[in-house]
Image 1 (cartoon, rainbow, N blue to C red):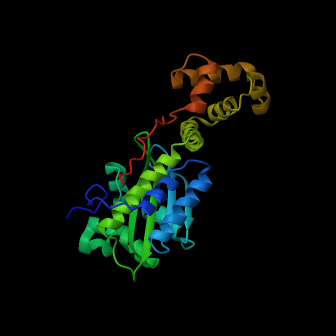
Image 2: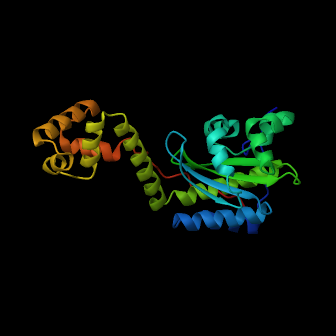
Image 3: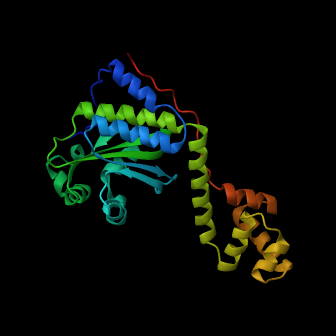
Length: 268
């Protein structure tokens, strides 16, 4: 059984109101405004669903999460026991298209890990969609509805796909991309520093603040010669040639690159 995805769905006829709504969603601006416009539109089109918007790092781990009408504790349980085994999320990250969870499992949906989780919290059907900037999935949109509602149709998936694409265009504004890149860089830096011996890690963190060798020595109650020795060791470890390059490497390590996403193409 092939999953119902936006790629497999028949083209959805777009009337003038839908086109206007999608263009409104594609407007840039502050992240909070983009999120709220998205949630308002999804609430209108899918009749008060539970909604989630995740921003992800380069490895697919959440940098931040934003919700509307989601029960307290639902996401904590998902993060603790479902996310790493969520086949809907894995499919989305691999295929970069919207997918309705129920279509991945058919009759076995209610016995799957994510299906069981949803049912326990009063939901029966869900969709997830990628937010793609520069060819990279930087986030996901999530919709879930209660058990007394019908499963998502092909047309529902198609419409949700257009929403994800419009929001992706909005998120491709400089401010949001820069914010995402900065958070991902900080996360990668902290992961790299966490693998160092304790004293070397302390020196690395102070280097990231712009502290001089003298200031680091004073803060850690060690000699400047010892600080210099740690700096040289960190340079060798990270393959850079001097303190300036080391600081730049640590503060900008593995920063994602966000190119311009193809413009939203809406056929009248």
